[in-house]
Length: 256
Image (tube, rainbow, N blue to C red; front, side, top):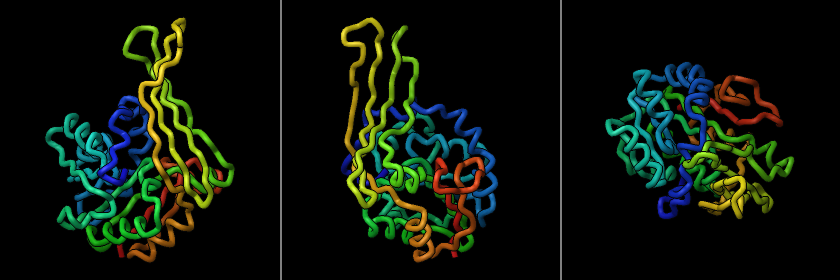
């Protein structure tokens, strides 16, 4: 998540809205196989959020540095893992971190679309290449915006979790408004559902965030321009092949 001056996610409580144990179990084989093939065990977790991937990789013997532009997300990661290393920085300014050369990097989730301009995406990939050792692996995952843009999809799947009080539910709603040329307004909202109350639904938090839906061809072309060699493109984090209707875009690239 980019733009440190705008912390849109401070009130969203993302950590409790994702079934993290199940997600990590699904993704673990690809993460370990891909990142373990780098020239060292130093790994950057870019857009680390509350640090779930960072903590998993650290438990597998990687030396992880988590980076996120959201102050609230970095704070959540540090609170969950006081021994971990989490830094607040824009993905377009990785050089300011003065990191030792890294053996691998990952950027997963809906992080990449927060870079809305080609110049920002180019700065991210160029800065990342400068942080990596030759032969280092970069694992990039985002939603498949080829499908989302072509179909004009307006929502992500609804997330429903038990609420703080008995009989309540917490509802996580994510809407998208399309503006053309891949530009979107993303509206995440957290609601409280209390059956039998008036009103039965209450908005706890809502934000509007500008996003850019990057297509596969755009991402791959910029990676190659910025010092990476493409190795494989997948459609899920469990290794399914990519197609225009895949759920995800997963690109595995290597620092030249």
